[in-house]
Amino acid sequence: MAILSITDKAAEHMKTLLKRRGKPSLGLRFGTEQKGCSGLGYVVDFVDDPDPEDEVIEIKGVCIYIERASLVNIMGSKIDYEEGNFSSGFVFINPNEKSRCGCGESFNV
Image (cartoon, rainbow, N blue to C red; front, side, top):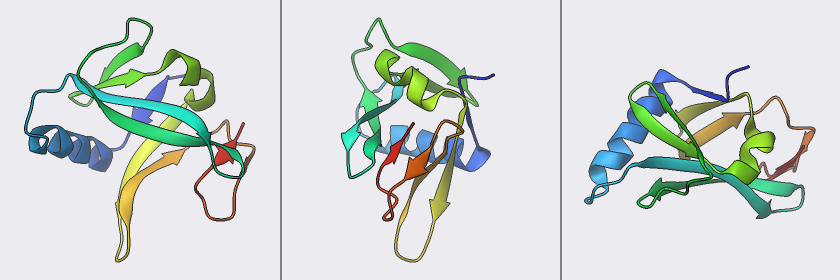
């Protein structure tokens, strides 16, 4: 099983974010944190200083860092990017999710 996969649309948006940032960045870090009514939420941030414990993979020209503690929660996930009339953002398709809260902000494994 692959650690993570991303769609072409997500890869292009990640590249755009990295270019638009205005200062150099090594890539993007994906992880989870305690959040919402179901327990966990996804976190995406720029990487300026790599954490030696991060899992690092390069996919479609994007360097992705995955927090070691979050690896078990997002292993095998697919990241897409969707744009809508009222919102846009990364969408995680996570085979480990057991349930998701009604508003879609958090999940549990």
